[in-house]
Image (cartoon, rainbow, N blue to C red; front, side, top):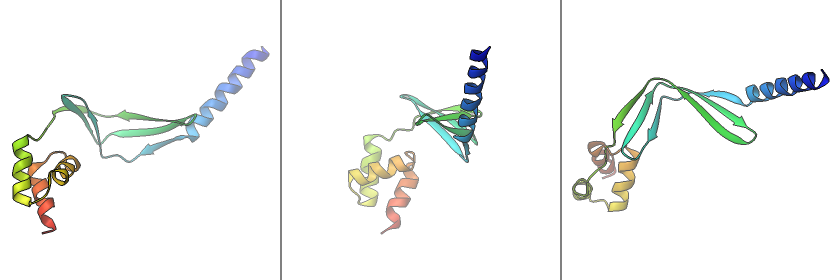
Length: 112
């Protein structure tokens, strides 16, 4: 009987600890990048938990799959020509803007 009470107390303490280390994150979109496609969850509910120093995220919501939009070598060269920027700058901006070619050109030409 004593062991059962001890176990219940330990479980109660663990539940309290988990609840205090849990918080909801105000996320707008979650993207899981796979090798050949992306899984996208718009307006997700995301819960962050710290379990004994190990961060953990729980994501809930409607998921959809998107094809990966990888720029070609010709795309990169075209952006370099249109903006006068070097390859490293172009590739970095493409990654930042989810490989949106038009947005990348506009962003890189902004400073000119």
